[in-house]
Structures are given as structure tokens and as C-alpha cells.
Image 1 (spheres, helix red, strand yellow):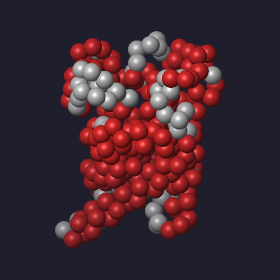
Image 2 (tube, rainbow, N blue to C red; image 1 turned 135 degrees about the vertical axis):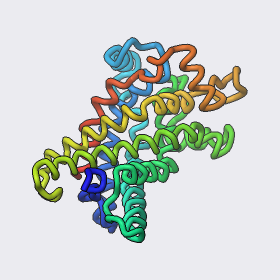
Image 3 (cartoon, helix red, strand yellow; image 1 turned 180 degrees about the vertical axis):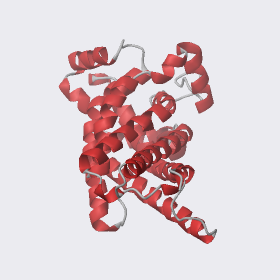
Image 4 (tube, helix red, strand yellow; image 1 turned 90 degrees about the vertical axis):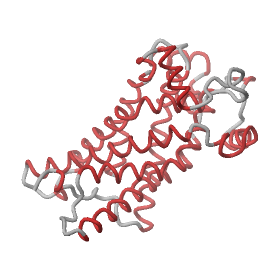
Amino acid sequence: MTEAAAAAPVEGNEGGGAKETFKDLFAGAAGGVAQVLIDIIKVRLQTTTRYTGAVDAATKIFKDEGPLAFYKGTLTPLVGIGACVSVQFGGFHYARRQFEARNTLHNRPASLSYGQLYASGAFAGLANSVLSGPIEHVRIRLQTQPHGAGRLYSGPLDCVRKLGAHEGIMQGLYRGQAVTLLREAQAYGCWFLTFEYLMNRHARVNSTPRSSISAPLIALYGGIAGEALWLASYPFDVVKSKMQSDGFGPAGGGMRYASMRGCFAQVWREEGAVGFWRGLGPTLVRALPVSAGTFIV
């Protein structure tokens, strides 16, 4: 049997029920708080050239806006990211069961190929984008708005109201959703695929069942999967952040990026290839522990 045919389900996040849902909500909320402290640095580096790097960004944010600035947008992940984690794992296991049933129907081993695992992860990402798109949009608006008396939004609810008032729910709150769909599909396809590959490889090399793999190793493989998630999808995330921090109004006026394609082209023209990777360093630092914790909670 090839490695692809030996793929098995993710451990510990199947089964539904109140207990698993609570675990997903708790893991997501905790991860949301942990992420936001570094996420503001990532978003600032993605959306402006004011900072020379992560340390410079952190220093200036602390000096100009105070320590509480690092908590901008914290409430949004607290409320929404737990639900996103539930959708991610729920969507993955739903797609996996569909592939298993199809494999069995065609007299093939029920175990998923790695291509099917990627597709299951991509499906989970697409399902998750319905929540993650507006949640991240609100967080980015709060993280990039002017500090002090010039701020645009008093909080998440005020931000939602004003975004909807500009161009309605789809063009306002869901701005950047096309690139969000691309990012989520690629990101979670690679996330689940990487984790499953590492778990299967460990079980095969050590001739041991997956259920006997220790929690520290599961955390390690989950952390590596988190790194793969961002490396595979980061350019999409940069474009998403730029579009979701952009102004409103006619293109060339308050708005710089009229479309996803236009944003890609403008970043390439003005910043070159490096523009698609700004802020990657702090993102990878954050990703390993957050992703590791998601798989072992």
C-alpha cells in the first residue's frame, strides 16, 4: 500500500457532539488571543511600508500607541475563531466521509489518497471562509485604523455597522472574499495534508498505530502543518489584507484596489515579489505554537 492510500483520519477532532464542539471553541478562542498579539504586526507590515521589519513595527506601535494597541481586534477572534475551528474540522470530516463512501462504492480501500485529503481540507477552508472573511475583515479594520481621536471605529459592532453602510453586506463586510476563498482552500488543503502525511509517515516508519503517537509529537506535526499552511497561502493573505484595509469610494479616489486581480498587479508593480511576503517572519513564529495547540486540545 502506498503512503497516499494509507492516509487515515485526523485523530481527536471527529465525533461531533457538545464535547468536541466545546474543545474546538476553546482551542479557537485561545488561539485567537495568542494570534492577535503578533497579528497586528503582520497586518501592519502587509499594508504599509512605514516599518522596516517586525521589530521596528513592534517598537513603533508600542511607542506611538501604547501596549494596549497589540490587543486591537482581540474581541473579534474571541467571539468568532472558536466557531471557525469547529467549521474547519467539521467540514474536513464531512468531506472525508464522502470520499470514503465513494472509495468503498468503487471497490477501493476506504482510506483517502493524499489528493483526497487535500481536497477535503480545501472544502473545509471554503466552508470556513463564510465566517473567516468578515471576522478577519473587522479585525484588520480595527488593527489598521488611525490611533487616538482620528479612529474610525469604536469597536467591532460599530465597524460591522459602518462597513455594511458603505456598500452593503457583500461589497462592504465581505470585501476581499474572492481572495479569501483562494487563501482558505489552499491553506487548509495544505494544513490537513501536511499533518496527515507526517502522522502516517511516523506510523509507517515506526510500525506503530497512529493512536499511540505521543501528544508532543502530535503537537510537533501540527506545528509543522501550521508553517506549511502559511508558506502555501501567504501571498493570498497579503492581497486580502490590503483589500480589507483599503478605503471606500471610486477606484483612484478613496479606493486603491478595485479588484483582487488589480491588487495582485499593483503589488507586483510597486513592490515586486517581496511585497507578497512582507510580515511572513512573525507569522511563522506565531503559527507553530498556535497550530500545535489546535491539534492537541
